[in-house]
Every structure is written in C-alpha cells, then in structure tokens.
Length: 450
Ligand SMILES: [Zn+2]
Image (tube, rainbow, N blue to C red; front, side, top):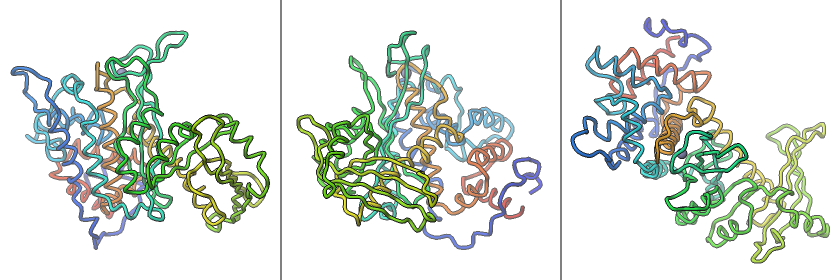
C-alpha cells in the first residue's frame, strides 16, 4: 500500500472496512455487465461520416465520451493518452473497451448527429436486471415525475433549444423530464429513460414539461399498467387534462401536490364541505419521536369548476414536533380513496416525490456529475446526448451500489461521492487495471489495511 499512501486522499476520514468473506448472488453480478450494455447502445449509433475519415470507430468515439462522465473527469482521456504512450495500453481500453482515443473536438463533431433516445435500451436493460419486487409498496410501483433544466444561455443555441423571448433578448435552454422509481425505504432512486423537452423540426409552439409528461405516459402505458404504478409529482401535474389521461388507464393512480394558488375552486369546495365529509385524523408516528401527523381528507371532490372535470380525493398533511412546531405542510390530490387506515401511507407516498430532487437532481447537479455544466452544445443533439450519458453514468453507479457488495463497501468508505471519484481518477492516472473488479479489489485491499 506504499503507492496509495503517497496520496493525501488516502488518509482519514476513510472508514476501515471489514473483509468481505461471503458474497451473495447479487454481489457476484459482474461490474462489467452494465458497461457492456452502454457499449451495445453506442455500437448502434449511426455514423454520419462520409468517405475515409473513419480512423476511430463509433464505439471508440461513444465510449470515450461516456468514460468522461463515468469517472466524472474531463481530464480522464488526456491521462489515458499519456498512459498509452508509456505503457502501450490504458484504462480506457481495459475498463471501457476503446483502444484508440479520439480528440475532444472529433468526439463532439461526430456525436452531434446522434439522438439521445439511442441510449434508451440501456434503461430498459437496467430495469429488467432489477428485482422490482423489492421496490413495490403494497404491490404498487411508485414513479416520481419531474423536469430538470440543465442548460441555459443567451448566446449558445442549437436547433433543439427551447426558446424564451425576454426583454433583453432570447433565452435558450435544455430540459428533460426525468422519471425515477422511488421507495420509502430505499436510499437510492432508480432512473428510467429521460424524455427530452425539445422542439422538433418545423414545430412552432415551444415544447413544455407537461406535454413531455403526456407523451411519456402515453409511450409507457403498458409499463404503467403492468406495475400498477402510482405517479408522484408536483403541482404542475395536478391539472385536469393530465389527470384525465392517467385516469383513463386501468390500475394506474397518482398523488400530486395541489397548491391553493392553482386550485382556488377546489379549496373553496373543501372549505364549504360539511364536517362529516371533511374528516380530520391524527397519526402519531413512532419512528420519528413524538411527531404528530395531522390530516384533513375529503373524497370525491371536483378538481375545478370546468368541463370534463375529474373527481379527486383531497389530502392536507401537517407534521408537528412535540413542542407543537409545524415541521412540514403540504396538500395533495389523489385518485386513491382515502380512509383513516390508508391516509398516512398515501401521504408518505406524496412526500416521496421529493426524493427525485434530493437523490437524483441534487446529486446530478452538485455531487460531481455537474449536469448543468456545458460539456459541449453542438448544432443538434450533442447537448442532450451528453446529458443522457451523464444520467446513464449516474444509473450505472446506482446499480453498482445496489447490486455489488464490493462497490457498496468501498463507496461507503469515502466521505463523499466526489472524493470517491477523485480517488478512482488518481488511481487510473498512474496504474493500469485490467478490469473494474481489479480496480475495486485494489481499493478494497487498501481500505482494509488502513
Ligand atoms: Zn441547444
């Protein structure tokens, strides 16, 4: 471990880990498996190049780009070029499967023609590889929907940019609807394929999050009904056209935030209800010392005063500590019928929508992935393709955390995700690893010896 001790990152506050003696079935899942799935998507990228200008294969170009996001380092490729010169091989080849390393400019030029949806089969594979039974809540899968804006500029733009006319000029942006599977007792969230909010050729009206959500729901009807999905979302989704669409699917339900400012008719209706139709209920939560959950619920109320108005159940939730201080308050509408037996669980589902903010967007934006950073914009697809690479990398890391015990242990031994990937980068600058298992065993041995 002399080599490791040369680096300051290898010193405390790392936790010493115990020897892993028995690996369960999931732990034996090969780390390469998910990287291979990324590769099989990248292999299918259409090659836009004409003639003889093909020194690098599409797989080399795509995996070179992906590796930068996977190791969360823009400098990974230049370090591997150095290693290739000195050692004749490099970690790009052994860990990601590309022999030749193209320049950043060449990568950007070639990948601009690749639609981000070409990576969707990876997400299908990832979902299929998971044991979804462990993610069910009373036989239902919870899917949180939310949009994320990951690029905004007044000077850089492409044909897919969303445009907003402001007093000081046009604002260009990129955004995506990112559905994730959540579970109240799972630390991680499972990302599904993102759907980019973008303007198609010849489209005059700007695309928006709710339209993207309608497209996503329509495209995933079979998945939603098969897993009896309960959709979770913010106030944007608690509108009649979207709710009517969801209610037209059998076995699909929702719990959406409903703010008073966007639902005045509903709130007036609730206020005017007789006390027998508007039930108050208090639950004392044993898991959180002395926190009281105060609920007000009403079933079969109209969402608004318009035509074709959906009937919803209304739920007001407030959490107080033992001193009577309000810690949380929110209001939801749901297609589920509320009773004093199920209201606590349904309210907890509604609260779980915040996990998409905490466990997905916050990590993607601030914990090393830098989703909002401009890695390259291009003229057509590049910005969205690089964003999906970033989300794929986050998903592979998540799946490794869930399914591989060695990865889990070494990842948890570092005090932050950023520090973990900094350590991996430093190791891969100086040492050639012949596989991911080799790299992680090397780190594990180091941690066991501290
Ligand atoms: Zn753009």
